[in-house]
Length: 381
Image (tube, rainbow, N blue to C red):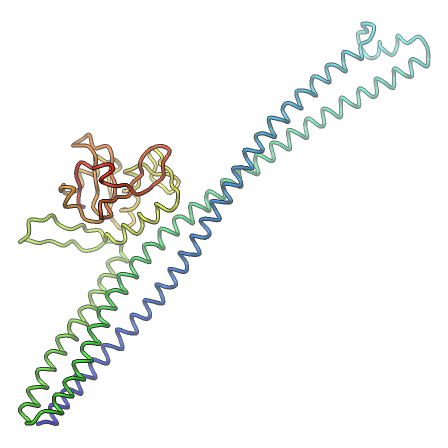
């Protein structure tokens, strides 16, 4: 009977080691993926910073070119005045034209001299006109080149900002997956330890009945741990699948009076919103893209990435939510300012009395504090 107990423990230990091996391997693979995403984020952030510097330089060059344009316009005006002066100088003795100016010479020598003067004036006039044309062409080309370079850089910056936001979501998903796998690994290690302890108890049992009893108890305990570990792995896989489709399952409770939890994964929402605060995205009335947001454009953009379609205005978004007191707000809920159809501002609650929003003209997407500007109510999607 004692051998039977040891056999049970051996089978239990083998199962525990198998679960532990799977959990350890999965955790290592996820960590590798997480490290790769973190490296991409660091690389992308560097490119974002370089892109912003490059755009600033182009804008500085554009401002400098505007000054050069103003200077060249003054030069062109001066040249035009010079042409007029030369024309007046050529009409000496009230001569009606340069030909009359030459014809009215008192001698051949004077005629030759006047002819040379006329030729010089003509060449100067032609050269001045050529210089004016070259200056205009130079300015036009410089303006075109700078504008094209600036637009290209803005497009690149926008693409980098989008990549950074997408990577932030991937990072959050992998961190959630890693946490679940680490929990499964810990449970598997506990099952392994239980199996080892059971082997000691069976070996030390004074009777076959005690050995069998110890084996059965240890088997039941370890099986429970292993079952929890397997459920943890399944939950992790389900969570990752859910996050991959960018929409978590709704949680409902018939015995609680608390509002239903958000159907959107709050961790992913907050990760994306946080990444947007680092991109210097300006407030733009009616803005719904990385080039500029207004308050409802920001929330619509963020939640839209996770399968939740929000209306265009703050008031309409408020109507889509279940109203709750601000004191009951959870990370990922929306905060609103105003009442009814007069709701005029919306933000994403991040917890700890803080929120992320697109404030107003002249400001960027950033964090705000309830203590600094208190919302009227919160809304849960």
